Image 1 (cartoon, rainbow, N blue to C red):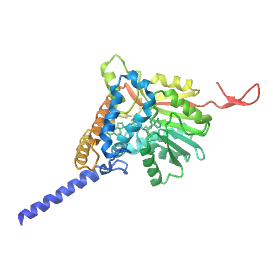
Image 2 (cartoon, rainbow, N blue to C red; image 1 turned 45 degrees about the horizontal axis):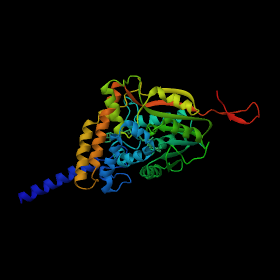
Image 3 (cartoon, rainbow, N blue to C red; image 1 turned 120 degrees about the horizontal axis):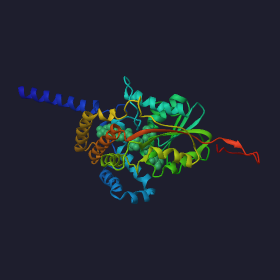
Length: 373
Ligand SMILES: C=C(CC[C@@H](C)[C@H]1CC[C@H]2C3=CC[C@H]4[C@H](C)[C@@H](O)CC[C@]4(C)[C@H]3CC[C@]12C)C(C)C
Ligand SMILES: C[S@@+](CC[C@H](N)C(=O)[O-])C[C@H]1O[C@@H](n2cnc3c(N)ncnc32)[C@H](O)[C@@H]1O
């Protein structure tokens, strides 16, 4: 009799523990993805490990060869997002970017405020059509549509994200304002001058040549309209002859599918080269902004909990094989990003605000032409 009672108590305790571990601790900060729902995007279960190896092979080539074959980059970025999208949603939320921390406010509030700033900078308003370049699963798109009342069209290279973004748009009741398209932002499926504004949040860093994506954005914008971008860059503190700096930046590139980080002072010149006027540029991470990396750093214990959880789910075959390796890669990446933030050599929020010049009447024939001032 006593043995039965002990066995029952142990079974109930174990069930309670599993429930707490998987369903309570395992749910995303913004509910919508739980650990038990981790898939690997559109990759079939048996191909996850191969795809992960394929992802790494990109970085085994010498940098010159990798850059020379930059036409492969969108496919490699697509593979990366198949591998990480569910883990990002589960462990971070629906907005795949950083934000300055704000004392006394939650991460969720800080994220929304950083996104709403974009809507305000480009003056988005009801009736306008705004482009979200590299939209992820649409966290920013929903915040910006809700703030401004503008119609937002997002583009992402990753088909799996399109499905997730559409489902979230519907669930949040914002599907009338938010639309998502699968495509390459280097060759966008939109006509010339078809948007009243555009923005990109921590996405154009995936472009092998920034001028290519900026030129596309310039093409689809109406004359006189605004574009704002939060760029990942090295700052003025970065020293290419310091092995610690180089190691941190390479770590960030490898763990975030980046063909090569750019320097902060290259961005404006590229924007001007494709025809934009640069109205403002600033590192939004500079004081008085609170550190963006504390959210990553404060989560050490959470990472271990997540590691145990992911390992258990893979062992039980609930999550696909390969999920543990991807999770480890992200843990390493978080270390490099934190180092980049603490040393000040890297920022994920170099803000650049641009305008496509308005049309002015041509003095000779009276027809409108792009102003060059
Ligand atoms: C803009 C990009 C992505 C930025 C961030 C959203 C992500 C960068 C690193 C990611 C993470 C690192 C550690 C993970 C952790 C080990 C896991 O347990 C839970 C998820 C993480 C916190 C994950 C979340 C998203 C990031 C912070 C790039 C790709 C251009
Ligand atoms: C780090 S996520 C940021 C997503 C979103 N801006 C956010 O903040 O939540 C980068 C996004 O850029 C997209 N992306 C990268 N390269 C792309 C390309 N060539 N064409 C279209 N989208 C691309 C990815 O698919 C992903 O959605």
